[in-house]
Length: 222
Length: 158
Image 1 (cartoon, each protein chain N blue to C red):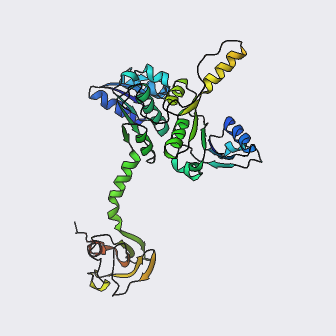
Image 2: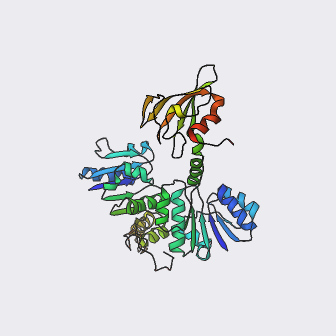
Image 3: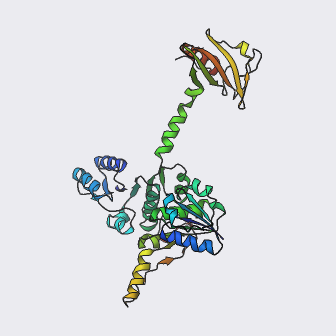
């Protein structure tokens, strides 16, 4: 497979190396001459020290016989133009673009870029997967004591939903004292029935964490 | 007419000034506030700092209700992207991108983005000054196809 890689930053450099390693034919375009020759010293004379956005140089780099063009510069607008030129001007069957602003994904797809890789989106996705861990937030430590103010967000499936505060198995050294419902905080009474979306504010020792998670979030201790 | 100008360089600024003077509703966007020094003191339009290739920024400056977007920054690709955002995402009826690479200028006109190419424009002007025949290359290229209809002429997958 002949792959034309545009952009000799970290991504382009490692991509080129990996592709060469798996026996593909690769040409890398990098407009910065110093960077281009630095890479060429290592991977050989497959580096074209020209701007891959410029139609003339894309042609000279063999774009019209490329099977895949991968646009991996740091600039979304450059990557878009590289892919569009490759696709519509040079008839490249498959174009891949790196996208930094997740908002641009839709536009790129709409304009015919075949594959869109968004590092921002990937990291975001990974962080969002972690969010359940943060259903229990340690808000503040109280003075020199080992007491903390803790906030727990009750989601669907929490064992506390539908129960009153008195019915919950709250660990020793811990007490629930307020509930935030639709952004309004009210003191939590023993007969307050908890519901989905409530944020329960507790005060307790830092080492109550595991039991509090079990009571409010239904997490099974690891 | 409501006009959004992306890029407040010499061309953008002079254009903004004349359009404003003619009574049009002008919004100028540039990455640096310094660029707005080029605008006259009595400029009545809006000058907003921001990235004209960012959809959120364009929406914030009210580009959705614009009749025309002119992308006149130093970067061909930024211009092409701003113009395509205007046509495709914001539903602006008319957009033109300054594209100084003649190959890209012609290619984008075929893709439905009107382009203006300073390179051929100036070469033709200089040829005229020297008494030579013009290159015959187009410098202001209207969109050939409506933007983003599948391009089949070149055999691309579209």
